[in-house]
Length: 262
Length: 323
Image 1 (spheres, rainbow over the protein chains, first blue to last red):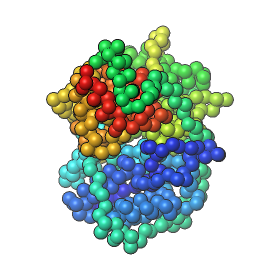
Image 2: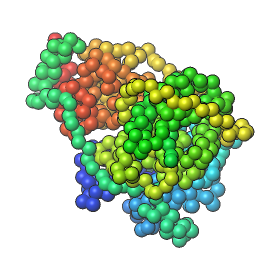
Image 3: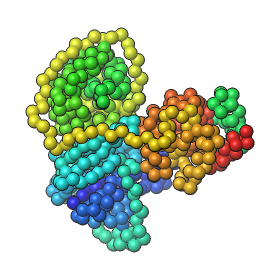
């Protein structure tokens, strides 16, 4: 099975304070630690599991600057066969649509059975590139995939719906799936794998190599534009209890007793 | 003159809440844009839904086809592409749900329409439509513009807009012939599978202790287990804890998990992403322990403790056990 996985190198902001850049179009990225976007990490693992079962090869793609090689190398270290970085100054400020356009030009002529992406990226959270890309490639897709199973040339899969419900469906290959977190247990790369990945070549393709017109990418090729970013005001409803852990615990127990919940 | 389309979302014989939330918002936008509000209903034997929708919209377009009984993005895409091309609405609203996420991006791409996903705000200013959406897990908000087009598309976050039933609008119900010609073979719906509920049903508990990413390591889970025991409650969690396999899926609180409304909900190390909050905000008393004072969970909590949970949880457990 030939599998293409699209990943994104994103800042980890789960426990960091975020500052908006002076032009209000992006966040201040200095000092932030970057890693593979969480759902993409599950997509890589799903590809590795499918390769272990059905052989074939995995190609990982990203649209990003040279620093994104860090994420690509980690994918190689885990057992991905080939890494390609799509990179050009004019790709900057591409929205989900333009990003999908860039990826689609790179994938179009490849030999593939399956294209995987994460459900959504940790940074912009659009949940848009994967399904857009499927339409551009003219292949069927399924979003929010939480299990996959191969059944003679087709795939049977579960999609995560709301309220603990799953939808079971069958889809013809080639197809694109957006992979939801929790579908598997992503592995860690071995030291040996990391060493080996250091020596592997990462192919880079720019605007010209992809045969794209400049107006098809970046702001010109986008269908949406960020006007400004701002930090939402958190109007804390909560009465904040203050003091040592023992003091706040004692105060909380008193409150809960008064409210009749303990 | 255009119109505003709202795609009615239904599953297993029920219209989903996001449909009405979109109709509420759509009504406001329809006023601002001076256009009619049109509910678009695709399904099989859905007359009852059409009547219900007609109360909240100027008109209801109904496409009846047995191939539309269950949601299938491929079938929905064909039908909606046909309707949008024919009627050229100025705006199409779709839920940012498991359905909408599977449908809107490919539909917008097929029709070459600008799409903004997961909107928590939509507003018209000087005749221009703008969207507001969250980034970085809700830590940043963004104001987004659509590129110029005849039709705009937006997916709307579930539970982001309130719905209040107003005066019935008495919309006209219009049947539209299904444009589907042949069976869609590339993507087939088979069945729904309900997540198995283990021996503990968290939605029935009076006290829920829920743990999130802040717990850091599996070894720390015993701390919250003990706290849940001391409170006579059950242990639940947010998505990252379930994804990590530290709690089974039937203990997940939130949009894709279960909805709970206990007397006491104690959120430990949970940041309070909107997908989690929709599953617990109806709880009577909400207490949050989180070391980040800016965590959105403090927006919904009644009482908050801003400190390291690894220090607070043992102290609180000890205090409860000493009662």
